Structures are given as C-alpha cells and as structure tokens.
Image 1 (cartoon, rainbow, N blue to C red):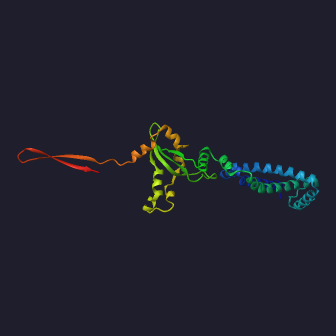
Image 2: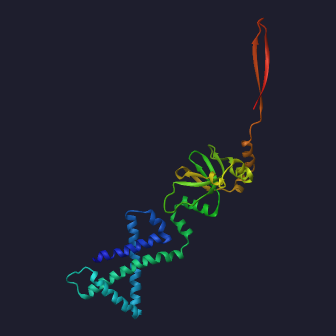
Length: 286
C-alpha cells in the first residue's frame, strides 16, 4: 500500500462524518464535484489531527495501549509499500501514519452518530436551508399561516402541509388554503374566498351529504410551484383586521347571489290600419 493511498482512509472518514452529522449532512448531500471533495478533505484532515493527538496521549500515558499500538504497527507493516533506502525508524513512522489514518476513519464513522445526539435536528435543518425555505420550515413547524403571492397576482393564505426537504431544492410548496384573493395593481390585498367557512360547513354534516371521503380536508391541499411564488410572509388575521375591519363582510357580500331583477321588454306591432299599439310584456329574470 502506498502512503498516499493510506490517507484515503482519512478522506473517507471525513466524508462519512460530513454525510452523517446533522450539522453538515444536508449541505453535503446537495453538493457534488470538487466541492464535495474539498469538504471531505477538510473533515479528513481534522479527524487525522484529532486521531494523531489522541494516539500520542494514549501511547504516552497508558502502557497497555502502548503494547496494543506496537502490535498493531507490526501487523500493518507488511501492507505498506516497500521502499529501498528507508531506515527502520522512518518505516515505522510511516506505519504509524497509516495506523493514525485508520483511527481517523473509525472516528469519522463513530463521531457522526454520537454528535447527532447533541445536535438538534431543527437547528441543523434551519442552518442548511436558504432564507425562503427556512421561512417555510419555521412556518410549518410553528403551524403559522403564510401568505403566498404568485406571479399572476393570485394570493393564497394557508398552512404549510409538509416541511421542505432540506436535501433537495423543493419544486412545489404544499399548502392547505384558508383564504385566497388577489392583489390589485397598487399591490393591495383583496380577499375573495374564505375556505374556513367551507370547511366548517363540510365538517358539520355537509361532507356526508355530498358523499365525500373521511379525509376530505386533504382534497383541498394545493401544490404551488416554488418558482411561481413572488413573495411570502406570515399572515395574522388579527393584524389584517386592524387595517381592514370589514374584510369578512366584504367576502360574504361578494359571494352572495345577485337578487332577481325585472326585465321589461317593449314590442311594437303595427296594425293593418296603420295604427301602432304597444304591448308590454313583463318577465321575471332569475
């Protein structure tokens, strides 16, 4: 085994740690190419330094470990590539580096799961996501409604159904709508649909009358393409009501059916004598 090849063990240890530990797992699984290589190399160098320092301390203070380390060196020595002109101390030093590289690989495999015990998943996810998806994750975990404005000026307000995957860039944002509307040319929000009123009606028996399944609420969930979202913000009905006190009344008025109106039609039919009379027909338009 060439000495340079032995240091691949440290590289694998660094990759294993970066892939398993929550603090770096999500970003490691998203990167590729030379970025992934340098990330693994940095982790491998740190693990090799820790393994070297740990080995020196153990050899210097624990005779039992010193005997174990000496036996391990003799066991690994035949694996190392033989080079002419090397003295025994130099060859032994190289074998010690190989042993240290083996330790760094073991550290990478063990330290990742152990570190996860002390690393909160929520913290790790939030530091690994971008600002937009970190916002969606917090809204989903805290069950806070969000307002999403699309590039068509359509606005959906609702709850995030599922948290975005921190490993991959999400394509869609799953949303259970509560309200919807649009923004006028000046950017003011105009709400036109109250989904909660519909949910309340269905919940109190209307769903059974319509023959809807037991999980009818999930049928209202939307999958909004992430690249169509222009702005995203938390939505508070209380704060919105401070600026628009009658917003619920306006939604109700918009959804009311227009009352019937009378339609009056005048038909002129000339008589044979040349005199004209008016016939008035009244129809009720519904």
